[in-house]
Image (cartoon, rainbow, N blue to C red):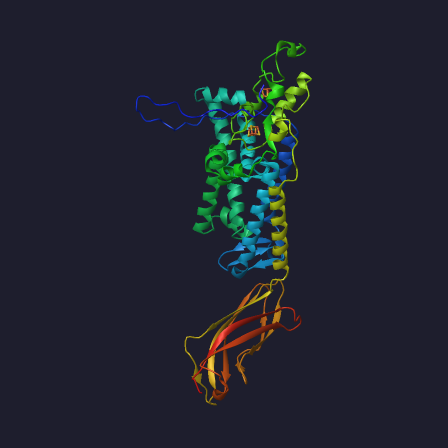
Length: 471
Ligand code: SF4
Ligand code: SF4
């Protein structure tokens, strides 16, 4: 018997008559069966955590405003105690890159656990499947219901299912938009008809997107639309955890009586009950070998373990294993690719943490007025600037402003600036120099802004000082 995962030839048959080959396969509706088991419980735990995070975080307040809030009109992103400005988006990009590397690391190590347990597409699909079971019954009842002609009972069940789906979609959409428009105001305005048109549009859009993705498209998103599903297979190696059927133990499959000596009949442990296929959310038969459609949800493991328990056979006919294990070789936990991802990940987390901890809590933008320079009544050369002071902290700060770069530089304007928490203060400012002190027509000047109480909070910005060339 082969100790390899079987590979099937899926090349379309040769077309001898010159007709075109239709590559379109219409979708076969998948009716999943309910099941219980360890991995289902783990998924429920992960799903509850994800739901609490997603639906709960948006209602938390911090420092007088929503704790996590993309304030798009003000171009600020609040995340608990930290405020990110457009200048800090490099840090947010860093967080995204670290998350991507984290995902690569997990994929190399444990395969598609992200897909099976925490991907929102999967989690929402499992919730929608639960709604389906509550309203239309388990697998066989749903198949029967779909085949039956329309009746008041069937209409009622379908209505209840779609109503529940839309309700979950609405709460999901409203919550999502609530991360961009404060959720408390949004919710009350939304349900009293006072919200603006864009709020209705975006909540409606995300409601329908959730309804369509988790209710209708389901496994099609994973199989045909998700880019991560496409490229993650290249990250797999023979030591990556995969959900796999053990053909050496399972074959030859076939039905049998519970206590018969099936091995004497040449049978393996698989009783060919097809429960593993019936619970699969992507509708595949894992006994056919590793397939791109498999999202690693382990539903088939739970279903098959239940069967093994009933038959008094050892569990694990379908299990999390590796290709090396399946072929009787030793699985290597530490391998160069995994170590490489771990090292890169740790370095990036270190750099990102350092950049976050040392980022300035004050920002200063200086733009020079279009007028090159003017001469004041005292005969000095003056340049005018527009200064934008950003307090990125969660408390009010008072700063003192200075300028250097030229001898005898004088500031005309506010020297002491008070800026409320998370606010921007814009002001005009003049710099003047005696003409004979100018070394050239274009000179570099530096503005320095310091917190009056904490000298560590300071920022500098460069600009140009223009004057007549006097030498
Ligand atoms: S659930 Fe287990 S025993 Fe039943 S068909 Fe699948 S692999 Fe065989
Ligand atoms: S084959 Fe098993 S692990 Fe893969 S998607 Fe189907 S049920 Fe989930």
